[in-house]
Amino acid sequence: MSDEQQQLDEWQLAAMASVQEYARRVNPIVSCVLHPSRTTSIDRFLKMMNEPPTSEAFVKWGLKNGKRKQILSDGINSNTRNSLSIAAYHYKRIHDLDHSIVIALHGLNLRANETVAGGDITILNAEYQAFILSCRRCLDQLTYALSSLYKNECTSFRKFGKSISNRSDEIGLSEDLLATYYRHRPNFDGWLMKDGDDSRSIRDDLAHYKSISVGTLNVNLNGISFVGTDAPRGKPINRHLPDLIRELFLHLSECVEGMVGVTTDHFSSYLIKNYST
Image (cartoon, rainbow, N blue to C red):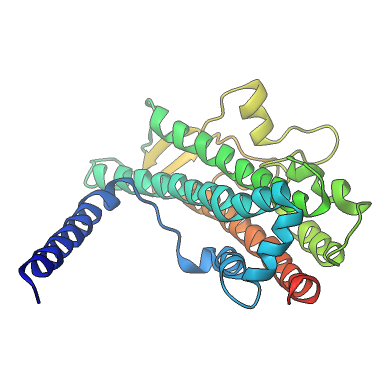
């Protein structure tokens, strides 16, 4: 090995070490990585785009459908994935803040039947509001991505079913996709879209009418709770706050998983049948 080649190899090793050390220091500060179980279908869609036997067929489909290809691929692999990660981040922040309150109050001397309540909880409210908006944004971005398969540009998850029900279905996707959509949609009623004709959702209140709150912090010998949480009618608002939020996040994750999964199954078969050499 020449001295020049040896110097180049040493430089490359040093550069790689720098990159690894950079990631070790920075990633814990700025990164929020979803558990692989939350991105199974998105990862399958990405694999369909980039690996045989469908990658070449996807490119050929894209030559005829350039804008649709861009909306679909970016919408699932980047926008929906990112918004799901952001929703997960805000859920984790609420969970961690709740835990920090418990730790801070450990050993507080309270008498039996005594309750301490109140205080400024702006940070918790900020995370709660951001969580609600990120959940709806994730669904709307997924809607926009999948609508491209119908030569449509629907951006409202609430309207997605009607927007594609009468559209041409060259892929043979609609029956299974609509079944998946209508199975998951009720889980968001009251939270992210209105439940019925007359009631507003928590997301609607936040986006258009008022600031929403996790409620008033109450502390007694039984632990902590939030009284008066802005939540849909019929929801047990005396539940532990992180549990209430976690339920909505799991519904969101399962909806994305289901809708992207059924789309990937049908679209893969369509590409192989119609665009493979």
